[in-house]
Length: 258
Image 1 (cartoon, rainbow, N blue to C red):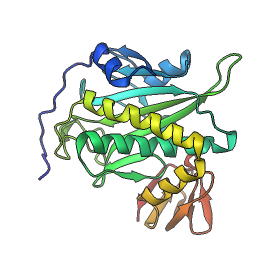
Image 2 (image 1 turned 90 degrees about the horizontal axis):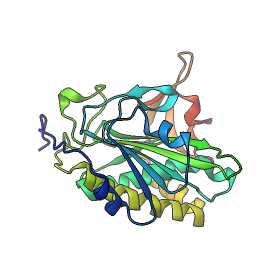
Image 3 (image 1 turned 180 degrees about the vertical axis):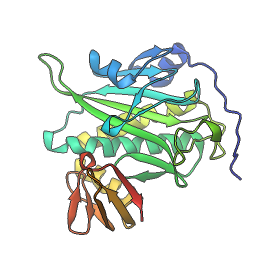
Image 4 (image 1 turned 135 degrees about the vertical axis):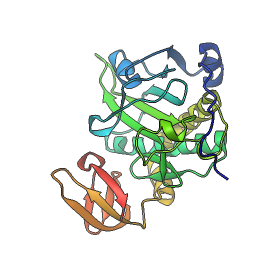
């Protein structure tokens, strides 16, 4: 039975524990307070860096949406990576990241997680995690990806920023943020290796796991237009197919079940 009013475990994160959990591949930075981990990571991007905020006060989402959560209740981090993939496969990065975060959350929290196109994670009908990917260009170097990840771990019902959100605690899990971090980071490394090796296989896995495919949806577009139809699939560039129309993540405001 889900716990509706949990008392979340909100101990501060500790750098030594994060470093041990991440493993030798990663350089880990921990900030007690930060506006946006993506902004910090993009300001001086170095591949294989994890920027973690114990408390993020101005998290960024698509369309410059911002959000905040109570201290100690969310895991917020940004991974700077060199994807090592062709330019045509970059649109698959956020989809792959969604699969990785879903894998990590399932392993750590033992809850059923669904992937909503393009890269939101749902438990039941509530969003527990989101991903924001940015492409950055270090001077004289290869383009890098900054993968921002925000996971609602210990939020109670009264803490939710919007009614459509949820958390692992509300779903009945007492997992803490360090355990989620320790599961998500290796899952991310594994999916990036898979994407380098065989992008088509990662895309096919995403197609099979994306909960949006097969549903009747309302696609809210800029300007107030609503496209209603069946989400029939995901094309080679990661766009959602609704009827005869291909919709990119940057072209929408919301996608919701009809």
